[in-house]
Amino acid sequence: MARKIRTSVKSKLRRPRKTAAKKSKKAAAAKKPARRKSSRKGPHLRRKQNAGDPVLAMIRPPPPGEGKRGEQGHLAYLLRQAQAATRLTLERALTELGVTTPQFVVLTMLRAYPGLSGADLARVALLTPQTVGVIIRNLERDGAILKTPHPIHGRVLQWTLTRRGTVLLDKCRRHVQAVERRLAAGLSASAQATIRRWLARVAAHFQQA
Image 1 (spheres, helix red, strand yellow):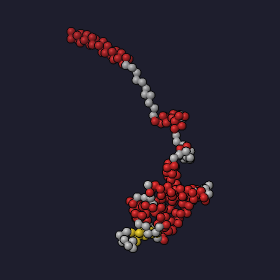
Image 2 (image 1 turned 45 degrees about the vertical axis):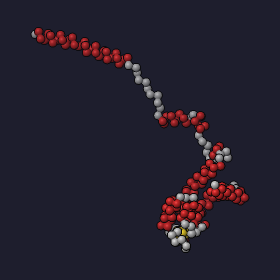
Image 3 (image 1 turned 60 degrees about the vertical axis):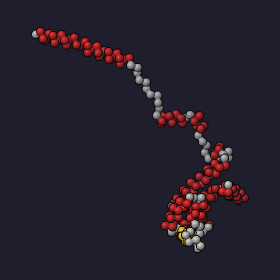
Image 4 (image 1 turned 135 degrees about the vertical axis):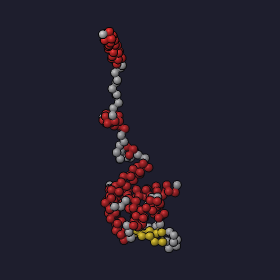
C-alpha cells in the first residue's frame, strides 16, 4: 500500500514537468521570426516582365537594312551580312538537288577552269584543302567529276566535269539564277558592272596586301 502511494505521488510530481517543458518549447517557437517568402522570381516570369520594359526593348538590334545593319553600317560588316544572307538563300535553293553550296562552287570553278588541281580548287573556291578533298571524293563517287594525271607532273591530279556533272551543274544554275535575279533587282546594267568591279577590286587589293 505504501509503495502504491509513493508511485502515484511520484507520477503526479512528474506530470507538471512535462507540461512545463512543452510550454517552454512553444514559447521558443513563438519567439522565432517567421521565414520571409523568397522574392526571387523564375526566369519565365522575369522574361514576361522584361518584354514590356521600354528600356530593354530599345536595346534590341534592328533588322537587316536599318541602323548599323543598313546604310549607316561599316562596309566590312555589310559585306559579311550580305554574304551570310546570300549563302543561306543558296543553300535552301540547292537543298532539293542534294547539292551543298561548296559543292556548287567547286563544280562552277571546274566548268570555268577545267583541269584544276585540288590545291588550285581550294584557292579559287575559297575553301580549305581538307574541305575540297572531301568534296572531290564525294563528287567523284557520284560520277560528277573525273580525275586525270597531269601531262607533265604525273603526281598532280587534274579534275574535270563529266557529262553527269555538267547536267547536275545546269540544274543548280537554274536554281541559283533565281537568287541572282533577286540580288540584281532594281539595279541597272551599269550599276551591276560597277558593283562587280568594286567587289573584284576589293578581293584583289586585300589578297596582295
